[in-house]
Image 1 (cartoon, one colour):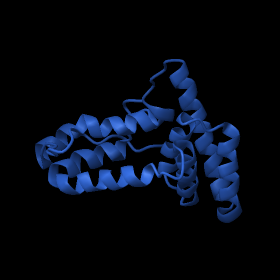
Image 2 (cartoon, helix red, strand yellow):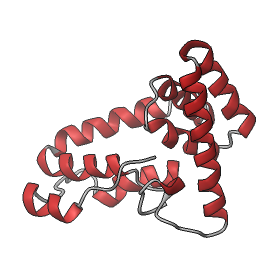
Image 3 (cartoon, helix red, strand yellow):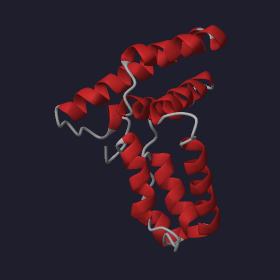
Image 4 (tube, rainbow, N blue to C red):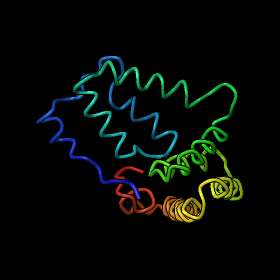
Length: 162
């Protein structure tokens, strides 16, 4: 369900190397690995490309993301459930990532389904169908992780490092 990874060697040789002096690439990636369990391909592309071309905006993006992603009013599970639902309403690929993050933060399958049901009320069967598909992919991802199966990433999604 996730896009394939970009060729980081090509980015480095054609665009340039990551040059953000405020935080090394590994530190930026670790935040996502802790939340989701792996570095999502599009995030890896943004860190690599923007980190080479405009490290200042990358730093600003990451500061704003960190501030908004961890609001004082909500625990991580609640914030991730909300993001899962918001992204599911748009039928966004990123709903999978925030669904995985919600589960890692303690969300139950019933809570995940409740979010899908709320989306169904205002988005219709497309959200219900996509939501069920995402939950099935998350279940497969969790089974693979529990069994130590690293078959090409999260839920067969092309991620290289879950």
